[in-house]
Every structure is written in structure tokens, then in C-alpha cells.
Image 1: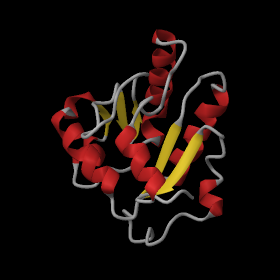
Image 2: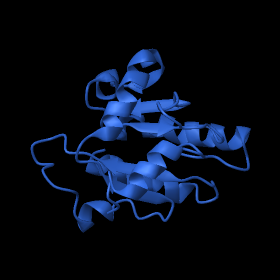
Image 3: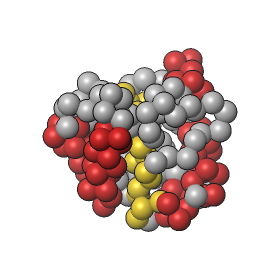
Image 4: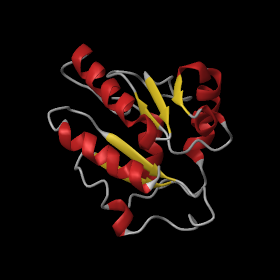
Length: 159
């Protein structure tokens, strides 16, 4: 996600403090300037306590998401090439509460790229998920055992 996209996501989270969601922000080395993990100034753009930030140097999340998004490219809002190429980047995804992430990632209820240009659609997707499932809207799956396990054991060191 770009810096302005991160700030836009922070603004959405601030407007919807009542939503019981968890946001996983995964930074990847995509551009030539991305040779190391983002510094504190970058990470502070997303300061909401519901947002957990990670550095995915080996692009493991891209490798997992790319085939799923490529198979469902018609559902991606915005610049499909950012979500369906070998590297998935500058993408926001919303998963419905209760979706299980075990093995291959599930198809998101919403996927939009770039984040900054699809922020309004992302906000509406979060509201819809909250309206349908008032007790547990999530920006990522409620139970994403493979992703969370990888995050915890250090494939994506917490920042």
C-alpha cells in the first residue's frame, strides 16, 4: 500500500471506531525504494490499535493471494493488474466474519486496488460487512489460521 493509501485507511478506521475489525497491513518490497522494512514514520500513518503491521520480504502473501484473485479478477475493483499479477500490492481486501483461511486464501468479499483510489468502496464494504454481521466485521478473516501462524512464527516479522 502506498503512503497516501495508508493514511486513507487510517481515516476510515477513525471514522468507524465502532466496527469490531482487525486490519492486517502487510508491507512488501515492490518498488526499488522498498529494499528494507518501512520505518516508524511510515508505520505511524496507520496508528489505529486494530491495525497490525508486518513486513513480507519474501512476498509470501502475494504468492498465496495472486492465484485466488486472478481466478476472481472480475470481482476486483479498480486496477486489476495490481491484484492479479505475480506480486499483489496496494490492495485492500475485506473478508466476511467467520470465513476460514486454511490452506489457500478464501475469496474476499471485497478486493480493491490501488487502496487510495478504491478507499470509498473499501469503506462501503466494511459497512456492509458490519450491517450483515453486526457482531463481527473483519478486515481479514475471523479465523485465518495459516496467515496468523505465519505471522506469529516470523515469516512476516511484526513491525
